[in-house]
Image 1 (cartoon, rainbow, N blue to C red):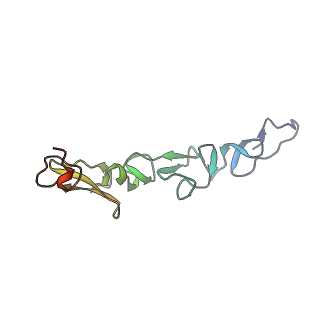
Image 2 (cartoon, helix red, strand yellow; image 1 turned 60 degrees about the vertical axis):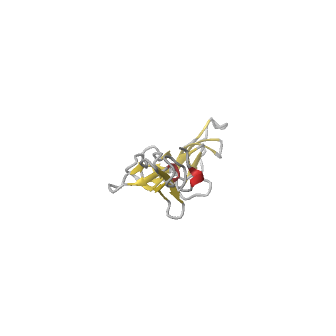
Length: 142
């Protein structure tokens, strides 16, 4: 592909990888095949890069990094059925069908984030509590 608005109108100068279209030699306007657009730059992958946020998947048709469903920390596509890891920080867990679903706890229990196992669970409130945000007597809300 040629650089847009090249000062040398009679000559075509190729863009450098990872650009497919560019403005100047370094500013990509679109990405070459095998690269993905994200926040103004072309990346070789949408996951696993330290400069790249988790929670994105590679959309090969659009050649871009797209945000995963809110239920996912990592995913292979846009729906909550395509989560690789559930977003336990936002209180989502895997269901038996493989979806990630928001966890709601019954009365006299509270949502506990288990950071070691990267999941959420419902635990009992202290026996004196009707509603709580932890398992101790001091965590009672009612």
